[in-house]
Image (cartoon, rainbow, N blue to C red; front, side, top):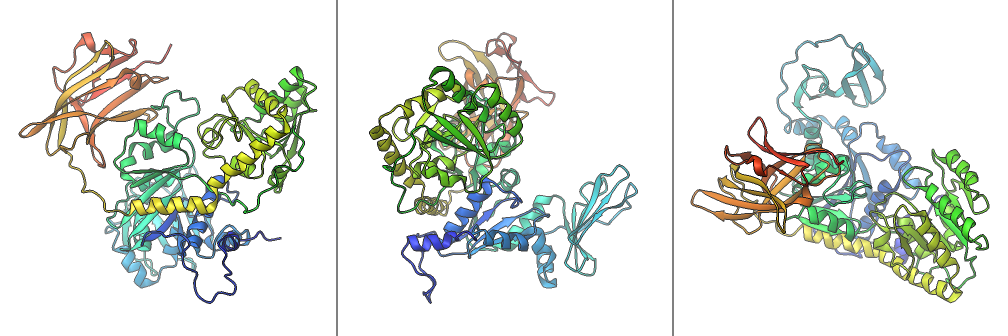
Amino acid sequence: MVPQNPLTRMARLLGRNDRTSTTPAPPAIAFPDCRIVAMTWTIPEDFGGLTSVLLRRSTMISELGARDVPILTFSSSLDVKSKTNELRAMGKLGARVHLRNCWAEIATMRRSQLRAFAHAAEPAPEQVPHEMELAVGSDDDHMRTMVSADGSVRITEHKRPNGSVVVRDERKLKSGRGLVLLDHRGRELGHWPRARDLYFAWVDHVVGSDPTIILNDSKYVGSFLHHYRRPNVRTAQVFHNPHLKENATSPYGPFTVSRAPILFEHEQFDGLAFLTERQKDDFSAVFPRRGHTFVVPNSREIAQELPDVESPRDPGGGIMLARLSTQKQVDHTIRAFALLEQHTPELAARVDVYGSGPLEEELAALIDEEGASGRITLRGYDPAASDRLTTASFLVLSSRYEGLPLVLVEAMAAGCIPIAYDIRYGPGDVISDGVDGFVVPAGDPEALADAIRRFVTMSESERVAMRRAAQQKARRFDDLSVTRMWADAFTTLMEPQPDPPQLGSAAEVSRAAFVSGSEPGLELQGTATGAWSTEPGAVRLRVASRDKKYGFEMPVDTRPDSDSMSFSVLVPEERLDPDARCTYDFWLTTAGSSQKKRLAVDAGALDPATERGVRGRARIYATVHGNLSIEVDATS
């Protein structure tokens, strides 16, 4: 049976009958008068949470806002037509949501469109002979690759439906000219040195001069989207997962490397959207922003009538919905139930685990090894597993990390009490401990077992009260409420923007020293020349490790002079105390600016007596180019 389209469900929720209506329904939610464009790299074959959220959000915005929402993609391997048909058959793509792809649309441009598109390109340099012999590597209806003797792809030719080449990608040739655009007769129309330049030209082609909001979900696209700045366009980046690594004990790092370009270029985005308050707070403590920062959770369909929480359930009947992978740490759940078996064998508590994955055999062996075969059963993948939340008593989540795990909301709506690790991020933002669920210290199977024991041994009236509270909490995440939050965020984004901040020409430190006392840290004093902003707090120090795993920004104190500006700042020592060896570099920048100036070092700025700090781990030095850096040794 084909799943019911979310549009039909939402129409019923709003009291509409779209099948009998002859006029378009007015928007149920007021969005700003602009285009709203979703963006991601691709729609994977076996897509997971991120893509599901993107599709659902786009559908809700299109339906509740009575508007078209294009989803722009850039992967050359995406078959837009078949993927669109597949998603519509699954009920995942609303009628006014349109999947679009850069390469598919360039390949089908008419001659007039192609000529207009070529205006965004640079004149193509004259082609020179290749520096190596090339042979055809692969050839299909959409693409042909040319490879060198070692099998490395050197040229990729993107084709039109008639087989002619529309773009020749020569970037992997030493003599290559980037991406060359060709007309229908094979004549060169222009070129782009980088792939992102071509992508941006296509985005310009799609957006035109209309006021537009681009909402990007892909961290890879975000790594280059920060370069896209247009006066009529506002860009916003969504954080679906933690920006900190799971082992981070400090908000200053280590960061997930794939998100580093977004973190350190955050001011290039008009808006950043986080799923939880805790993640937003962690980010803002390290990277204070002039741009907008929002918290908008993922949404779920929450039925108007929820399961009766007073219907009998086996108090000890648990459920776990998780892929059997390292991230989900099903082994912790196994150990928790093994502890229950060891210490309270009379307690009737068990859990059924629904999901498949690479660790299935290993986890099955662990169950036997821990003597928990009577407590935990691996049920495998079941597409209808979530239906069992209405009869399960509690849900276990023992993941290493998550974004905002919607399975918690789904369980709470069903009256199934979540018992979860307090990880970054999500469970602690959704669950009120002891009221509508339980959060326990992350990575602690014994605490997990204790919470399960506590819940199972409660009185039935206490459990019913928790189930009722859980259902009330779940309604905060329904489609209607969350889509209203997006509308509010978009309205804020479209407000008039302040003038671009001023940024001077250079900055140099005249003193760089570690100081002790009540506030130990790195003291910097110096002079900046040029037209720096005089707004209080606008000038900032940016510090980043060379591997981009650690860093932060903080305001500096400034005092304008006639043709320059003196500045000073005390960097707290704990901000320069990473858990690994690294080298920090320093810049001066301005809030809201895309520019930054490397801090140079005056000849007398360093004193051997004060060049070491952070318990002797850190050493201040000047680079060969005369810039300020700090080398931090590994922890012992």
